[in-house]
Amino acid sequence: MERYVNYINGEWVPSESGEFAKNTNPVNGEVLGEVTVSTAEDVDRAVQAAKEAQKKWALVPAPERADVLYEVAYLLKERKEHLAQILTKEMGKVIAEARGEVQEAIDMAFYMAGEGRRLFGETVPSELRDKFAMSVRVPVGIAGLITPWNFPIAIASWKSLPALVAGNAVVWKPASETPFLAAEFVKIYEEAGLPKGLVNLVFGSGSVVGNAIVEHPEIDLVSFTGSNEVGAKINGRAGELLKRTSLEMGGKNAVTVLEDADLDLAADGIVWSAFGTSGQRCTACSRVIVQESVKEALEQKVLEKMKGLKLGDGLDESVDVGPVINRSALEKIHEYVKIGKEEGAKLLAGGEIVTENGLDKGNFYQPTLFTDVKSDMRIGQEEIFGPVVSFIPVKDLDKAIEVNNSVKYGLSSSIFTADVNKVFRAMRDFDTGIVYVNAGTTGAEIHLPFGGTKGTGNGHRDSGVASLDVFTEWRSVYVDYSGKIQRAQIDNY
Ligand code: NAP
Image (cartoon, rainbow, N blue to C red):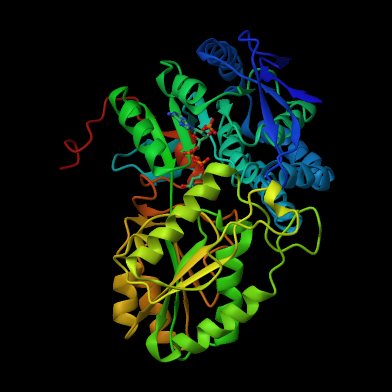
């Protein structure tokens, strides 16, 4: 049986707790292996290692730091299939999507390696003669990373790569559901020649290891992706400790379809973004805001496409929809379906836990479509995080924008229309961090900022150059070569 342990100060070591937790395949409950269960002391050991390593790393020229990231990129590329297979076994997404996710980490590694020769600051003219003014990025110090299971390598890459290229050290707690992929990613850092102590991996529960990261006085910032419930807790505590946090949390994303849209294209976009990763993407389409005149036609097209979706083991290339992550997620989804029915929404397809074809051993939920949903129903407002989509009919674009923005989240939204004026209105008025036009709500690329407005985040972004803002401080530097003490704002006025 595979046994994974922590990686601290360049060594693979089990926690002194002596405990191990099982890692299971959501397709059939098969035990894939075990993972060490860590304590706050393990986090402290990781921090001590990180502290020493970071001091030296910060002095390494950024282009040289980036050389290690290029090696990481090549190794990720070489191991793409291996990593994708582990991803599918551990969390269930279908293999094509798993390959896509690993590709995202590869892209991020090349992109952030390129940042080693940029890390741009500003040079500005000084108001005084013989004086030079500029800003430079400096590392924050030790970054605590807490990541979810639904994009176990992509999100880890969005955080660890910018942290490292900018000169920080990392203490990473991955989700308990996806430890193996985390270890495989860290092995790549090790093989790429990253000096010891710069990436430390500590397995264990959120309440113990995650909390210890938040509480540790020598961890300077916490970058978290996960649920609002946990994010709010982290933010509260980190706020008291005056610690920097970057939070990426839930979504209640919507596709808007207007009557002039290409309905076949829209149906494809809806099915891909509602049922891909079994609806467990933070950007999953959970609502379809449809203009009344085309509601039935669009429903029919989506229902027709849903009939063709094959459920099963994501390692089978012909499967479209894998399991959801665990039993409690399955029950939560089913509970929301019951709530939807009680609220008076009309169930057009799905709505049951799958029990046929041997799938009862896994966590499978039927792709589900509700219609005639009112925006203020719970299924129209709350994150379900499963393969359930709600059609909300509206009169026109104004109403669509109002409904789109009526939720507490602000991650992703999309519009299908042929009218360029309406496209630009949506781009301006949809209150989300990401807007798609004539595409579903998913499909972000790593070189643009990723994250959301309102309850989805706290103003920071993962990926893109924006992620460097999380992992660097700005230092403003003034060099006066006049040979005299010049007084800004005074001598010239
Ligand atoms: P989660 O339950 O909040 O867990 C996320 C991470 O936080 C895990 O590593 C978890 O550890 C840890 N954690 C749990 N309790 C903690 C605590 N008290 N202190 C510190 N850390 C703690 O979320 P999830 O179920 O893994 O992921 C699904 C959620 O993530 C959804 O809401 C989804 O929308 C969101 N998400 C957002 C984005 C985005 O970019 N906006 C991207 C992906 C996912 P354990 O695994 O050990 O519990």
